Each structure stands twice: as structure tokens, then as C-alpha cells.
Image (tube, rainbow, N blue to C red; front, side, top):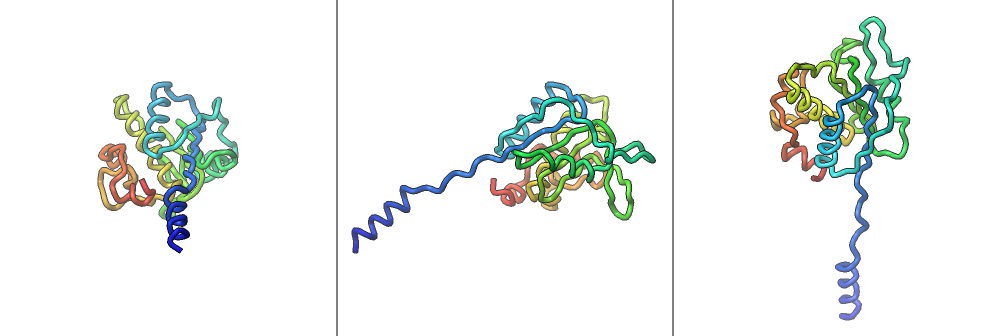
Length: 194
């Protein structure tokens, strides 16, 4: 009996569970982005979410069905549907310089910096509302908004625990994004088991 117990204990100790493969995240560009900024984005995504990151080659054409002519914008929910068609990836982020919008607070065409399915596969960000002559500030905004929207795809809600967590809601203000860091707070890290 003791030998069976030792054998079972040995098997429990020596047989480890199969490691979970890292998430596969793809970046789809709808607009040309600075090469150095691209590299910084890929590095920040990989480091923050412990994943592999792939750039989809070329510049994708924004779907005509997403265009909202009255405001010269693109509807973010339609872009998310388009991004969902990319197979072979756990998450896909689309990046554009064009203005994007969604329906929010009873307003059909509410301009946003980004939108992500929560949880879901796809998210999209726009640099249109991040513009500033300060290049370093622009780059920081760009990366934080991208990390934020990818966080939503992984099921993270808006953070109410820390004013510096990049998952805090922007509430329509770029000032909130500028106050944040490129880090998740302890609570948000726990939510995605990091």
C-alpha cells in the first residue's frame, strides 16, 4: 500500500501540466506608422501581455461599410467585425490615423480614441484624437491607448482602483490618458493572472 502511495506521489510531483502557449496578437495597420513607434508598440505589447506579436503585412484598406459620411469618420464596431476575420490569432488590434466613433450615452456617433470587445478578439485605435506637436507625448499616448484596448479584449474592464493604471477610463479626456502609466495596477494584473 505504501508503495502505491509513493508511486502516486512521485507521479504527481514529476508530471507537470502542459504549459499554456503564449497569446498570439496581430497588429493590422490601416495607416502608415513610424517605424520606431511600431517597434516600441510591439515591444510594449509583448512585455505587458507576455505574448507573441505579429505585424500583418501591408496597409489594410478601411472597409467602405465602416465609413460614416456625415462626420467623415469610421464606425469602430464595423472595424471590429472586419478585424475578427483575421484567423490564426487570439487577438487583433487595428491602427488608423482616421477618426473613429461608436454609439455611447445615447449618441450615435461618439468620437473615440479606441474601442475593444470586452472580452473578445478585436480592438481598434485611432491616432486622430491623440495628436500633439510633442512627439514623445504622442508616442506615449499611442502605446497606452493600444495597451488599454488590448486589455479589454482580454476581459479587463475599466479600472476604478488606480488613476495611473492604463485601464482607467479616459472619460473623453486625453488628460486622463496623459496621467496614466504604461503599467497595469496590482488589481488588474490579478484579473489577468500576471
